[in-house]
Length: 321
Image 1: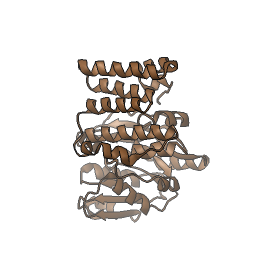
Image 2: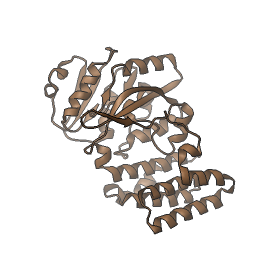
Image 3: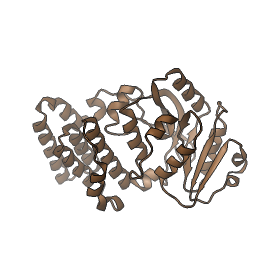
Image 4: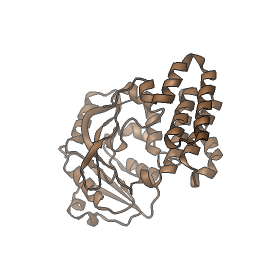
C-alpha cells in the first residue's frame, strides 16, 4: 500500500488487511511524503505485521510501488490502494488459486464500486480468462489494479516504470501478459472506492497520455518490434508536463497508429476521440482514420467497422464478469 496523504480511507484500508482470514501476511506501507507515522493509524498501526517505510517527499506512484515491492518478503504480492477495502477472504482465496495453478502468474478479482460513504453503487469492469487478458490489455486494463495478486518474482522482473506516472500499473500488466498467464477470480473480493479526490480523477489528462503511449509501445512489442520507449517519450516531452485536451491526444495517437500500420489500434483511438468529443472536425477526422485503416487492411473491414461502432469487447467477443 502506498499513500501520499492522510485521509479517513487509509485507516479503513489498513483495517481491511488486518481482518483477512489468512493471517500469515505482511503489510508494507510506503508513506509517500505525507508525514504520517504508524501511530497515526491508532491501534491498526501497532500490529507487528506492519512494515512502515517513510519517504521524505512524494516520489510518485511508480517509485512508491517499487519501494514496497523491493521490500516484500512473501512469495506473493497483493496490491491495495489506500482508499479501497479488501474483503476478508481476498488474500486466502487468491493465494489458494495461485498455489493450485502454478502456471498462472497473477490473478485479479471482481470488485464492487463504493462511494465516499462506503455504499455499494455498482460493479467494476472485469474480464476473467487468460485469453481475454492478453487481447484486451492491448486497449486497456482488464480489471481493477487493487484486486491484483502476483507472484513476487514476476513483479520483480517487471518493475513499475517511472515514466508512466499515472499508468505504471497498466504498463506492467501489458508486459507481464505477454509472457505469463493472467486471469481473474469471478468472485467479488474488493470494494473499489470512487471519489473526486482520487489520483485517476485529479490527473486524468496525464493518465490518458500515459495509457496512449503504453498502447502504442505494446503494439510495437507484440508486432515483434522494439518498443523504442525513449524516442516516443522524447517526441511527447512537451505534452508530459502539460497534456492537451483528451480528444486531441486520442486523435494524435490514431494518426500515429496508422503511420505505424496498426489499423485496428488506430480505429480504437478514433473511437476514443469521439467518446470525448463529437465536434464536426473530430467526427470527420475519425471517419478519415476508419477509411485509411480499411485501405491498409481491406480483409479486416468487418473487424475495423465493428471496432469503430462497438469497441474492443464486441470486436474480439470478450464477455466481462
